[in-house]
Image 1 (cartoon, rainbow, N blue to C red):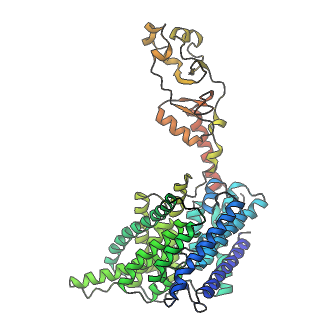
Image 2: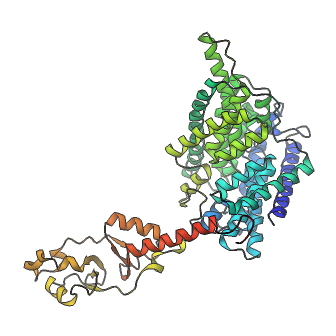
Image 3: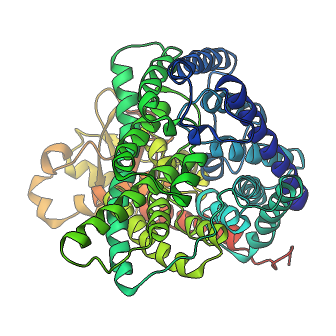
Length: 573
């Protein structure tokens, strides 16, 4: 099934690529077979106006789709993390159409979001109709994403590890065979139709000295800063447009105006940027253009995504990193010349590859994917070793200082609790309402210590929950505390006067078990009352920390067992 799925997704990638290329050739009047971002002789009025037209079309189409289906489109990462791999094929098709419009009219976005969305959407639709269980459906969604990226870049290893790192969230023998086969099938389909050439042709030999590795680490640190800045810039653009109280359908048009203005100076920012990447890798660009293009591409990408054009930052981050790496090597070479080390010749291609992969790893959040992508594009293990240094440093800096990839950052901004592709959807099902006991013992807060002792002798109940005159929650007391000898001289005093009883430590039925465990830790107590609501404050049950922790561990072990599997590599044990 994964082989057939991979071949179908590979064919779909070819169709989407061909459609976007044809749109570029017709409306931008570029020669057949040329990429939009490599064409420097574009008509200025096309560069300025077509992104605006694309913004209007994208905004209008989004408004129509939102009226028809007023909900957020779930992508592969969110589906696998929260919904057990369940995605809507209709929503996936809608996002693909919007991405075609965005990229086709020159927005600075990549097509990889459309590729993975349609691939994973088809996989999820197939798995749901066949009645796959949760773990197998997640694997099949990973197969769709792997085939899409593998077909897009003609790189099966990169596609497979994209699925492992971003969509499935783990690498295990259970998912190795289907994901690898899907990626390979998608690649073979593309090669059978379009040829075996990699998406970026690179024949140059790479030469790296020992000192280069230290410089690559510095490139990785700077690349992390560029990656973080680009991701944050997207959110800043969104917030700025939101503060202007512009309607959603108009925002892409405003974004198109800005992208068009930037593109009149740097036309390389148009589209996904594959043609410009090829230029930078093969021939390089003047240092002044490289430095300007870093800012221009980052700005155009942030505006495009932040204003509402649909698409991703995968290809955009590759171009951004390539021009950054090219600028770094030119700057370093000039510095060496000034200090009298003109005999040291830095390899431009190596630094370009390190910059490209490091920025992309920081943005996408898939370091192994970028390493294997360079290996498959170049066939050079020496270049791959250099890339590993930059990618590892960039990924580490982003993780320690920022903590998100672009996908998980977008989820964070929306308030969706996803930090990776690990399946946490089961947490939503393991709620306080399902775990709590309903035989809670309640008593008035005005009950005296003596009366309490008579009603609840030691061993009768571990904890008792106080209520006020309106039967609203007023705190929790431990029976042992009330029977403490220190209260023997306070037998006629009400409980709320004899004891210091906090009233803000409680749980709600809809909270999940992880929230409950955090609340136990913060309250430093073993039992918490469960209330029907934060306003009504009626006691409906209670939950103990020991039981919640035990059930959490049981579900966690079950989830891990499903992911790692006690099955063989190719099927059920």
